[in-house]
Length: 358
Length: 263
Image (cartoon, rainbow over all chains, first blue to last red; front, side, top):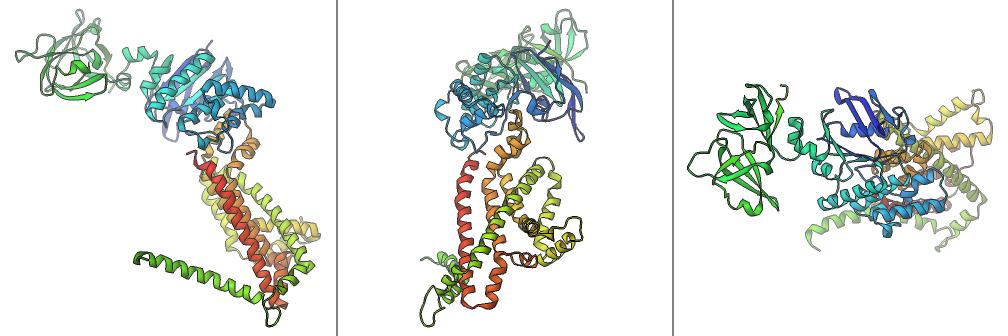
């Protein structure tokens, strides 16, 4: 039996369908992330689990019990919000002890638990400071400690890092993951940042417009995206439409050029599909002799984007869509802007998706 | 002084003169009790009058009661409006501004009609009950100021997030209001409180018609029969009110610091 289950959740706000039937289950101790652009329903789903929104349809089950109608203060869930939610009138320590105070824990016990948590988040020196005396990153760590103090059954995080600097974000997401693993607490995380989602999660749920597009491990949603939306949203991707030429040998026709794509084996000739290739998989060679060899395409480098370890090349493919290719920055020098190149898609590294319904 | 700075300084000077000259005039007049020499005789007489202490005490106690009742009414209301009933905000704002529009004399006649000895709730029947009525009428008079102050204070904090954070930790509504919301609108409530104090101390019409021994009617009584003592009283009242305003500044600054850093 799943630890936390969302069954057929539906929610509308006026005319807008925020959730159109969402089913999800979390195992105990799992770190699950809801990932998607603004408006996809991820925050609505989280707030329904927390009890701050009542769904129009569907149920929320925790350890087999229906908690859909339970008031938020009785759900025993810890929540970390995006906006700084620490109580301004209390010190960091008092904030963390708040949940325990409400549950009438004796002062000695509260202090002990608070000390443990401050140790865990690495802020033992800042216990007596007020929120306005703490940096953004420190405030979110205290908010995390406060949520964990009550030993909640589920930890909910609503884009906790969105308001922080990039460097702090990377550091803090690792901290969150470390703490979560150490405590083994079931966690539901919401973010629009796909890098963040993939870095910390056991599984990722990609959402769009109130529906789930794909559920899988970070490697799965990156390496084997199930829909064009997932392919485009997670990481960068090249994609184009092609027609299956030979379902036996695995070949497609891309605007007059025959390409080998293993993934179309088993499809019928004439079927139109979406071919997706990650930039790091694209192979480049300098073009010699004016024409591309069989099974490859010719193009001209039109831009370099230096990203540190990797350089992203944008290649103009004449009357086809631009192709992005990632090369290590040391290799990228061999393909200057304006140079002619041969572009190859390795047959086994290329994926194929069904054409989205128009 | 450069030409561009001269204008503002002249304006300040004009404002100061406009404000201080009548005060200085009153003060100077209050020192003239003994012919030919400046003395504080008028102040001595006022402060020695037992009625002064009695009425000032009465009004002060009433002011504190009004503040407590006013805050107890306004804080949960403004909070609930901000949290759940945003749409009702214009309606409530309109209602809270009504006391500014309706003259006190109309208010008190309305009270006398509603709560006289023939009504279901005969609040004018006894002294204590009339005190209660007076307190509620003061709470009404102070409503525009108290509501506006608290509403502004609530807007400065993230009411939704703080409420949800407290709820997720297991807090019920009383805990949220008393431990989370109220402490963070302390400055606002205090500024509303001191405005209430200033209103109650000087109020005349309702206290007089309900025949209660308040400071306002005492001021008027002295003013009608004496010459120098009213001037002394005016200066004393002004000093008390100004002390209140200083207190607001002191408390507001401390509390505002705490809230400001969390956005």
